[in-house]
Image (cartoon, rainbow, N blue to C red; front, side, top):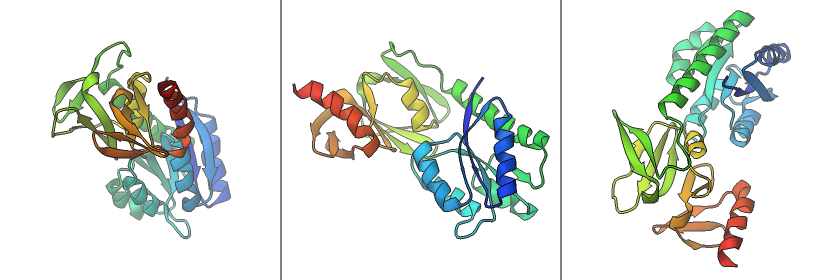
Length: 243
């Protein structure tokens, strides 16, 4: 069973507690954090990379709708969103930011579970579409427009996140491949001995790295910054190379 890691956001304590309780009693949901404002939620989402956010709309300083729009502009950050609100006039606007569902307060556990199941089904379908890649394989298949395209691992230079898509840059090719899959999902399919996540937006083929500086690596004349949370892991690899 697919487990969805969740964050709950609501400025009303009772409403937040209700969502937390519903999450905790749902077997395929895991509550990893909660907060009472959208500003804090933005930081939590960046840090914890949840699969699903239950998000109130009417909150001070930054509304849930504004947060959803900001998330759309953040490469590599694409949690599913279920809005929770006491106002029914936000439904159309909610779908414009790709919200999966819209729960109108006060909602029952049955309604909550229906929305959660909808998200789980979408996640599982996406996972099936993107196949389970064998780490021993020398190639992967990626869905590019209406075709499944075979990509040899040895040809990949680096992979760039663009919201819900990835852009796969290939050696000896002027045109990158665009595929509808998250960077996180693709990272899980690639062999860790050959590829490494460098920051929230890039995965790099280790053998294609041509130079290393204090905080960056270079691939095909492109400089890519090594994010703070990836520096220690990368340092272990670099130490092996230069000893």
